[in-house]
Amino acid sequence: MENELSQAYSEVYEILKYIPMSYLNKIPKDVLNIFKNKRDKNYKVKINPNLPLENQKLKRKTLILLSVLNLDYWCEPDEREEILNIYWKNEKESYVVVNDDEDIDSSSNTGLMVYREESFIERIWNKLKNFFRRD
Image 1: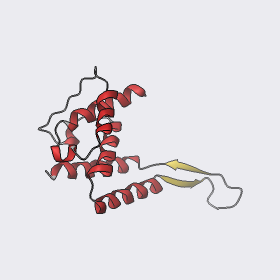
Image 2: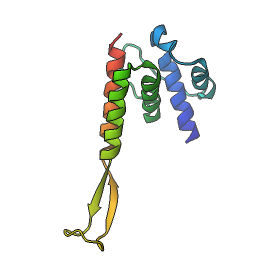
Image 3: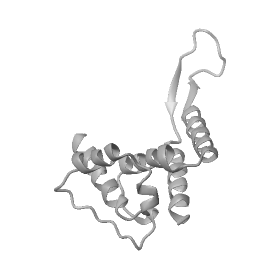
Image 4: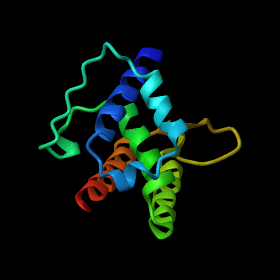
């Protein structure tokens, strides 16, 4: 688990080399140092700057870290609110109550079932694609 996170730090660190300096300057130095110092220096990151992010084979944790950077440092206030609403909506939709019986009564077995995780990632991914296309 720790290795996977350090590899994600490596991927983010490599991607940050390709973003415009105006965006890089919006990230606090201590946050940049986390990516630099906690990355896996032995992990070979393969980023092709000529390909869009969606065509890169990035780890899920890398996408999450990029979405946090986007939300915290690069979004305009109205974009930030829209993204937070999407996250909140996806969080609420990711759980559904399942009844084992047709009739709902106090003795029926109910449980939670997780579904639609892909839609959350797809929405993050689309926001990231739009962000990198703005330049």
